[in-house]
Length: 103
Image 1 (cartoon, rainbow, N blue to C red):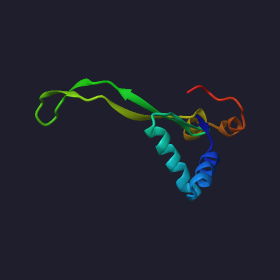
Image 2 (image 1 turned 180 degrees about the vertical axis):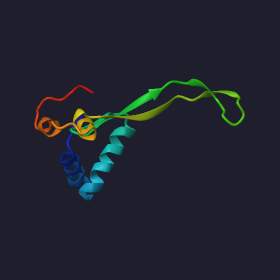
Image 3 (image 1 turned 90 degrees about the vertical axis):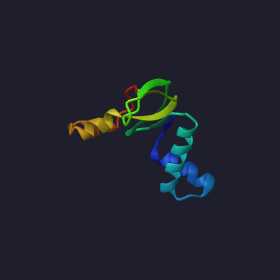
Image 4 (image 1 turned 120 degrees about the vertical axis):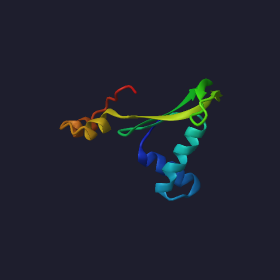
């Protein structure tokens, strides 16, 4: 799902009447709770990943134990954000580009 910040805020604002800044937060939480990935153009992608059951160790006692399967959220920043953070000069020119790197 590819979204822009404005599109997220407008959709929730129109549907539920929340303020636009609260609207984006609500939509992202809902999508992630349902196990869907959220891609925000020019910012990055939030992904829900499933972790399998695995062996672990209790750090206090040193006893072996099984850790239950669980879901975690990962984030991969966009190439535009990465360029800005790293101070690359041509990042603004890439913002107007219509191509998007695969995440």
